Image (tube, rainbow, N blue to C red; front, top):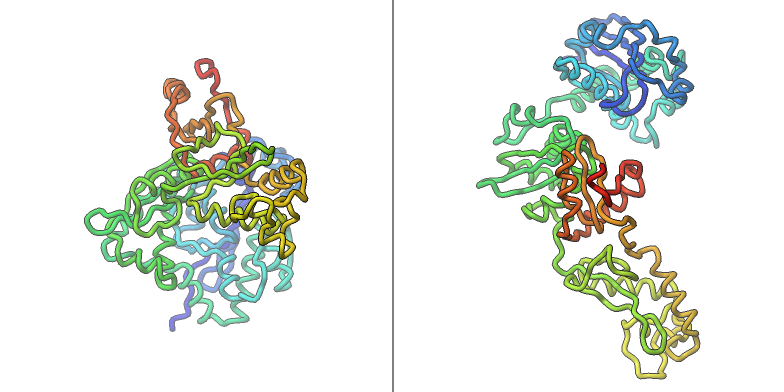
Length: 466
């Protein structure tokens, strides 16, 4: 085997934050191994934006240090020259590569090197290690730290790790590992490299089609091209991916403003197009939920609401949301055993009035069926058991917009109404009274408005003043 390595550029960058579209590079460090020689290049970069305090504390790079330094556009050609013809080596390479690629793209410059991630290299060669972050590598391999969280210092750690790999496994095995991790992904016979190259590294949904444009699989990603290639990379080891590899004839994609839009679009497309290899996210025609209704004796009784009766977001005391009746009853039976609730009182077991249920006889029910548990206690226990799965009433007075990239997703009563690009579309969608409830979109929206997109929610109760 030829063990001559291609030129390697070990790279680390420091930035103002973690978003390659919004944040900017403050420092680049490059250590090159080529033809048996080692060289280095480093540069502080004026990000032309604010450096947050916690970033300053982490890296030691302050606004004063970058003041008067060149901005990225002034050193772009030099950086490209340093990296040209070399394998781009970085730890968690998607981060460093993503920032540098985005910086070149803003200047209209193309940048598509072969990329080697040392996290993946460590996982491949040292599978017994529980972790593979840089601090773990330092401790596990006795690497010498010169300047942690500075670009050239961290790049030097990668070179040291490379030397450890070389010494431990030899050049032949190391070259084999590099080829495995960097080698060109084999494409399906009907898919050309240009077709894959045309897919943007942007958020969105991609659709694999088989013969006669039959949809095979729909997926989503914040980096569509990389995700598509990962399907093909896995084809040799994952049966489902091999099936996809063999059947795909065409790939299409739809770009979205951000990850939230991609999640919602994926859920909608799968239900509309019913791709053969997607099992999850398909529309359920038997969607149902439990509603607590008080009987004539004051006891709360779970009553199953069918798809036609359900209006999540409007109705009180709705619990669960299940794909079918069997799943709903199984959920209730599990709660009964966990909280010692009476299955007869829950409608899961038929008993004669005044007679104990089977659970009472085996000491799994506290006796609500024969009056040993008061109405108040029974109701409280039942509501407490169900509380975690309660479907909340829509928490806003009307529709809201959730900013995602350049677009605004309009949501009302947990239902997705559409994406607006301007004020007129916002106003029109906010007035819509067409609510098509979707369980998967409900889960996506609920998670977004209470977490990642909480600060991006804008109530549209008075849309004309937005």
